[in-house]
Length: 242
Ligand SMILES: [Fe+2]
Ligand SMILES: [Fe+2]
Image 1: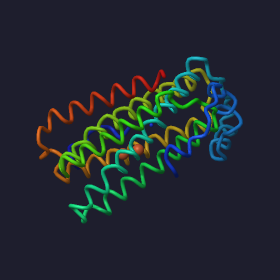
Image 2: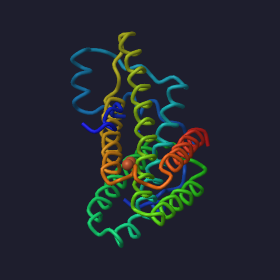
Image 3: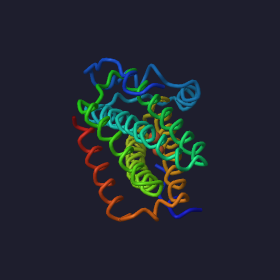
């Protein structure tokens, strides 16, 4: 297993598909009652456990998580969109890999886009800023060369992997607390955890692909990845709030 896998596995069109934002917070009923999956409904019935309404803090946390995940996945699609033409012009053998990673990011973006619309979570107000910065990051690292572009992927996916892991941990703690009180978690909450796990695994596969393709041979690798990782952490922090 590649060293990067030692990290525990950790949240369509692009900007134009974003519809106008609504401001209502994540709906308690939508999350905990009405939208349980058939499997979870069966298990909930079998165990005869009731569902507990979300607290305001839990609603705020989940709204914030969906908001930042949607912004992050948009940024990922824009980074790969900007990098791909420059990279495959000089390294045509990377076309399938770049296409594969972009396609997975587009699916991630679509998933969170659908979730924020379903739960009426407003997108980050800094959407235009992140879009410009993500495209600029992809374009500038691709101009620096294949290794720098891969170092960008290494840095971004390391932070995103950590970010999804933290979300999974927090939601599992929430579920454990309900279960300790004799309640069950809704099918949708359980499904969200599985979605986050699957997306995290794909992000960490991107990280592995980057390392396999000489990310660590990039000029000034430490400086480049440290700066990008700090930028990612800052963008995550701000997007959770704004
Ligand atoms: Fe992604
Ligand atoms: Fe990714």
